[in-house]
Image 1: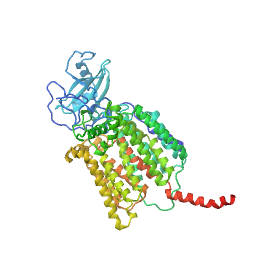
Image 2: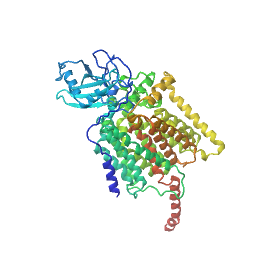
Image 3: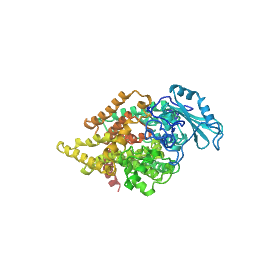
Image 4: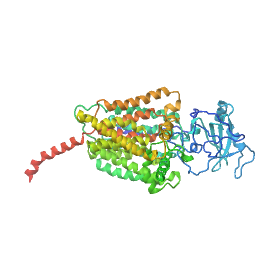
Length: 617
């Protein structure tokens, strides 16, 4: 039965449709504009000045770059200096070095049923031809006012064959087109992904079938959604990401019940912990080697290096980012400060996909996550759990997906895990450290701010009621002091208004087809209710009686982060590492007796054997 379950899960993980589906929905809002006479406005990918910019405040070059996690901009597959499409006026004469003319490619595009449908849907719309390298043409369709690009066709110059055609949000969102390797490069290959899924499950197959196996399969179920995403089927990938999120939310809430009855009997592993420790070392080497040789740097990693360079140069941290990463300043200041050491060591040189500083930062964050999971597991349940948790991180494919993309999302996990480690100690310094780390996590990507109430009230019941206000005050003082100190590089040059507009306001107002709220539209009321529920959940879990050990804290933090992600407009697979280590801490920690109980049992066994040893001597 176990073999059937695992085999079926791995096969299901990469079921995907064939072909490419272009969506008809539109995300960008229309706005009046007057195009220049006789010249089509710049389509996605044209960095020319003086032309109308398509689609909702997104720079033209950014929107041509496939694969984004930063909202409406895409992950770079070109270098920052790559030339975009070049507009060509209507003519029967082919440009120099080309076989087809502008009129010919316009006619090819106009004959496509999908472009005819777009033209009918937008009366007065028109098209323009553009040269692309190497030996390709791009035909872009624009609404009558020229403000919005509504269709795009790529044509091979040598054969006249249509290579791509896109409508709806897939015009502006190139990350929705399923370009191979836009995120994670070769980690998406079946020969990498499926073995990782098997390795992730393997140590736990000794146990009889249990709820843990279902939990692990649900964590891998995100692979199904990713498979559809990689095939540009967004209408399948987006809805499929919600069932595992909802399931994990329910499981974390279930683990918050106070413990009753006898202690759990411990983890039963198919592979002994020492062997898993060796596997951790080998998998770390594999991950680092793959990152160095194959990883690409998406826009968020590039943004981190830009911000670090600005901090080092004493320039404003927010506003006026390069045109190829215009909205790279949408994160908290801690995100950019974390990149400063790596920018100073490795510099900011190199093409976008090969920024050494971004690679070094991503590898360092990944290694920190492994170390913190080991320390947390050892402190909670002993070294075996620490090794198992470290193994889970290095074998889970979505953590490698984030590492290969050289994103900043592992930094969020690192700061949250560090806060949990501080929460495992009972001292004034530990309380202050917990508050400071909570502030740093929240000033990285803002969502972890929702964890502040939980981290502030953790362990208060263990203190005398008269000392609880002092503990809360220590947390709050450290939270505010460290938060203020982290904001100094930004506030030296930028006003609070500028920081707010470039970060929170931008995040709140952008549209995105990568959630059910943005993909389908008309669900604003439901989305608001989900967001309010997430805030209420964060507050309620901080004050109600619940399981008060580290397992309970990890489960509560995971539940809050998942609830926050359920309500956001832009969700992506890189956010899974935010809650994944917390989920594993809660699931595996709940199956093992506390480290103190294990130590007491070992001590009792040792004492009982002393008389025997003495007699034999």
